[in-house]
Amino acid sequence: MTEVTMTVNGKLMRGEVEGRTLLVSFLRDQLGLTGTHVGCDTSQCGACVVHVDGKAVKSCTMLALEADGAEVATIEGQADADGSLNVIQQAFQDHHGLQCGFCTPGMVMSAAALLKENPKPTEDEIRHYLEGNICRCTGYHNIVKAILAASGQEAAAIAAE
Amino acid sequence: MYEFEFVKPTTLADAIAALGAEEAQALGGGQTLIPTMKQRLAAPAVLVSLTGIEEMKGVSIGDGIITIGGATPHAVVAEAVAGAYPALAALAGNIGDPAVRNRGTIGGSLANNDPSACYPAAALASGATVVTSNREIAADDYFQGMFTTALEDGEIVTAVRFPVPEVASYRKFEQPASRFALVGVFVAKYPEGVRVAVTGASEEGVFRWTEAEAALSVEFSPDALEGLNVSPEGMIGDLHGTAEYRAHLVKVMTKRAVAACIG
Ligand SMILES: Cc1cc2nc3c(=O)[nH]c(=O)nc-3n(C[C@H](O)[C@H](O)[C@H](O)COP(=O)(O)OP(=O)(O)OC[C@H]3O[C@@H](n4cnc5c(N)ncnc54)[C@H](O)[C@@H]3O)c2cc1C
Ligand code: FES
Ligand code: FES
Image (cartoon, rainbow over all chains, first blue to last red; front, side):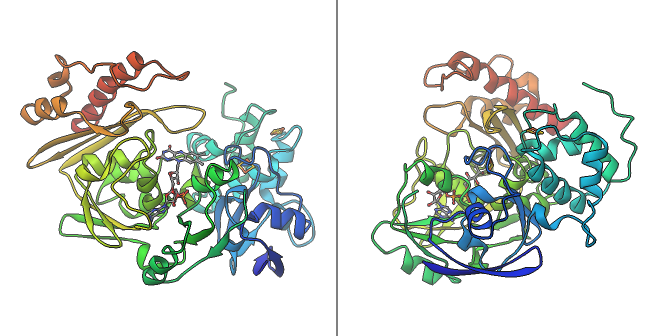
């Protein structure tokens, strides 16, 4: 076992892990942060997306030890300081961007990464950015709308496909 | 995944030393290797992460040559070469998805030489040089068939040097589930001639379509390819497409790449 230290949602966290411990296992099993989901475990679905040093990564395909010393952000840290939903989360609620909610943590974290890089993405840019996030329920349309709305753009304008 | 010892050296010299251990293997972004280890198709005793080695990261541009550190993620390449080599930037920016591009590296992609990967096409069409921990290998000698390269055990891809073409384009017919290339064609035009590299199609991995190169070096237009045909012999046939379909796509994607170059 090796000691690992990382800042998770602003708090310094420490733990003992094996070489093979995945970042997602460390977050879920050791830190109890079960908001990050495991959908496929084969780097296809994006349910496990978190930010490491500001970049979206699939935490099922990164070793915990690779995040030693890093700043990690998960869905648990997304709400505003008073506990209310942040702009992206609120937009998902307002626009019915989720049904079962399984993909939602990854969707919100990917959306947050996108809006940081590109504050006013077009519909096409949003769809392209979400290529690695699979949703079995919504048909994506309301997710795209939610992200458009969260970026302060008109969401009603996009046509259903 | 079986347990292993994890080491993360900060210098190339330490990485080379660590890879000298019995059953040691390099870890780039892990986007291929970690899934492979989960399936127990790889089970190294020591995993040597290359992601902490600063001298293997980043992009430098000068004198018509772009040098990309072997541990540079796809997302960084996509941004850094957008001005100097737009076709290469577009290729890097369209590998997998954003999370894959934030971790996956050019060195890992070239070392793996997946028959459907994108970077091998760019390296071969550009006549790139693969710089390793102990030598330099011309792209023409580097790719040796599906998942096979000139790399020896423990040899690290430290950098890749791309001569910048006059114009180039990569056209990828995406396999929508995996987002890899069903067929991808990279066309690059240099003063010495045109190079055409095809990925995703052949049982032998990435290859140069030399008939197309000759025709395009005489006349750089999609029409120049009209009389040519690719034989389905030796092409990959699977549930995503037959060998005939892939052979057909090679010509279609080459034409589109040329059209994009002149358009
Ligand atoms: C969902 C998904 C979609 C993808 N889509 C595409 C796509 O469209 N096109 C595409 O081209 N690729 C695609 N990939 C593959 C991706 O580009 C990988 O990042 C890449 O193939 C491997 O790079 P890596 O840095 O992750 O290497 P790793 O997975 O860490 O390693 C792969 C192999 O290379 C060796 N290695 C790693 N770095 C070096 C080095 N510097 N020197 C020597 N050996 C080294 C390792 O030992 C291992 O054998 C996709 C992957 C995923 C998960
Ligand atoms: S659980 Fe990580 S990509 Fe699906
Ligand atoms: S809301 Fe159910 S998977 Fe997306």
